[in-house]
Amino acid sequence: MTLTKPKLRWAIAWACAATLLLIAGGAQAQPSTGPTLDEPFHMPTLTDTSTLDVVVVEDWHVDTVDGTTRQKLINIHVDDWWAGVEIRVPVRFILPLTGSVNGFVITGSGLTGTGVGDKATSAGDRVALEGGVGVVKTKIKSLASYPELPGFPSTADLRLRFIETLDSRYTELYLWNAIMMRSITAAFDDPLIQPGPVIAHGGSKNGISPLVSSIHDDRITGVRANVAFTAYTPIRANDSTAVAEVLAANDDFAAAQAGLPPGDRPWTYYSKAYSDDLLEAAQIYGWSEAEVQESIDRVADDFYVSENWDALVARGVDIFSLPGSHDWVAYDVPGASTILPDLRTYIVPNGGHDRDGHPEAPSDVVDPAFFAEHLFGEDGGLEIPDIATTINGPNLDLTITFPSGGVPEDSRIFWMYDRRPDGSAWYLYELFPEDNWATMTGAGSTWTASIPLEAGHQSIDLVTTHTVTVDGNIIPISAPYTRVALVSAVPSSSLPGLLVLISTLVGLAFHKIRYHEGLVERNR
Image (cartoon, rainbow, N blue to C red; front, side):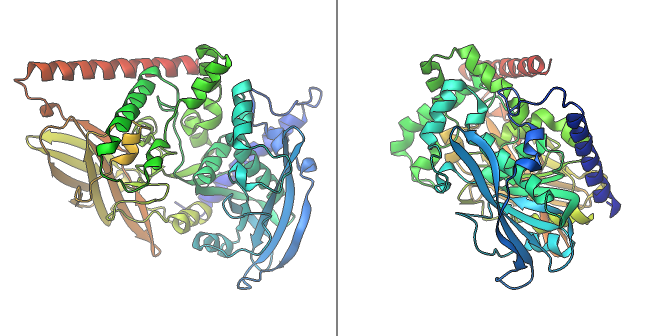
């Protein structure tokens, strides 16, 4: 990658954004009505600087933390999202001591309360600042974190309004992304912040908002997202087979829980993934199954990277996804890897909310390296490797190949057997065993491993980790999450076993056909 490539990427993005604004400006004969049921993220509204109503809380000053930056705190109008309540959030700008900057990195996890008080900078922030790129911090939190807004709805209020309307604007998913995009608008409205690349980053809700915002906001050129969903997988699409599987698995977990050893998290953790409670409540309220399904399908293009992949690739958006293998927000990593095999991903085995991951897994701290790559054209490390598996008698042989001759410094394989359905309590509870890992061997761009298979299993799940060091920063990557069917787990002499296997394979084939039929229908 050359030094001119990032500049070209964000220049193209800004040209696209400017074109959209010109088109919007040229259509004043038909004034926009703003966000609607079918267009919740209305960019002319979100990029309108005249409605920011900026209040300067702390004007530009040398920070009081270590005196190495200038900082400014403002408060902006986001939206009249809830009748009678003006949504306002703090936004902090952090710049080098002199001059202006071109672009910035932004996160919604940087501020609490009113945002008052200078903030320290992270290693990733310092990479941006040293290269003449700004840092922006806004406030994207759960509803309970906005007590300063009189009349702000509770989670129960929001849930009821959504059930009454099936309108995605009455969810936190709308609010978080509106805050992200309005904060970007406010940043570029400051004279010291000039057009340039924008990396949106964070974890959980602050990983979701960068991903979703990048779909709609051409100003975003890069995303680093931890424990956040990316793909419109069968369970998220409300596929009946997928839903039935996860609900049955949850019932099984509840029945077995009394006899299970304690897991790594409190028992309540394992019930946090998929739930059909909201869908059931909507039907109880009076919505038909078809109307509920329509509301789910309607927002797929608004919320999922998978449904916008070609457009994001065409724009040159860099996305680095770190979903964890056992997270209750990114609870469908196996399915997401199947749908988005070309998404740059590092999967921390056993990683997720409040989970440190497998003790042999590399660190997931990637901001310094990713920021340097995206902003300044530094080496980005390894490309996504190809993975191939072969059952070789009692062993599973694995081959990892890196395109373009990439050479990892370390490659590891982690495995677990018979993993339960995505999004289920079992999916969160059963971890990759601490002993189920191995260092791969190889030279150059090809690395291999052979796993002695345990008898009596139907499938084995594989996560690989590969690292390379660039300028002192370790950059990890994974091959797509892989599940291998172990046909030999069913003895050939067992007729009932064969019948079970045949039934399972037929069911999986039927499920796959139904899912792809659904994709075709939605894309018409």
